[in-house]
Amino acid sequence: MVLEQGQRAVQSGNVLEHFVESLMESLRVHVCDAENGANASGDLLEAVRLIKNAPYTNIYGSRGKSEFVLEGRSTGRSVRIECRSQDVSGSVDEKFPFLFLNMRNCTGDSDVIFLLSGNGARVQAISWLKRQCVDRNVYQGRRKNMSVMRMDDFRKWAIDFVHQERV
Image (tube, rainbow, N blue to C red; front, top):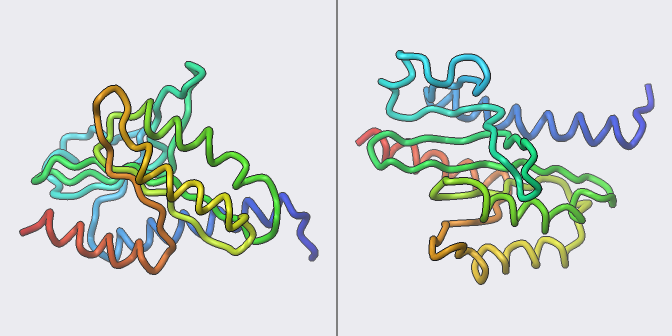
C-alpha cells in the first residue's frame, strides 16, 4: 500500500509522539491526558508526570494543543514539548515562526523543547529556530529555556531530567 504524502506525515508524527511516550514510560514517568485526568489526585503524588495534549491559548486567541508537557514536582519545572517530524520537503518548517511565538508568548512553562525528526525540514529553517531559542527567548521580561533537539539528544536530556527530579 502506497501512502500519500499527508498520510506519511501523520504516521511520522505519530512515531515521534510514541517515542516520547515510550521513553517516559520506560523511565517510570506517569503519563496522563490533559482532557481526562491530568489533575487526578494520584497524579499529584508523582515526582514526574507527562501530560499529553496540553492546551494553551495561541497568539490568535484560539485554543491550541502541545503534544506534551513534562512536569517535575521537586523543581517545579514545566517543560512543554512540541514534536515536529518532516521526512520530505513540505510545509512543517514554514510553521516554525508561528510555533515559536506561541511557545514563547502564550505558555507559562519554564522550558520549551522543539523535538524534531526527519531530514525534510530546510536547514535554514532549523537554524532560524535555533537562533530564536537563544536570541529571542524573552517575552515581557520573562526568559524561557528554549531548545531544539533531535531524538538522541532528547533521550539523554529526559533521562537526566527524570533523575534530577527523583533525587
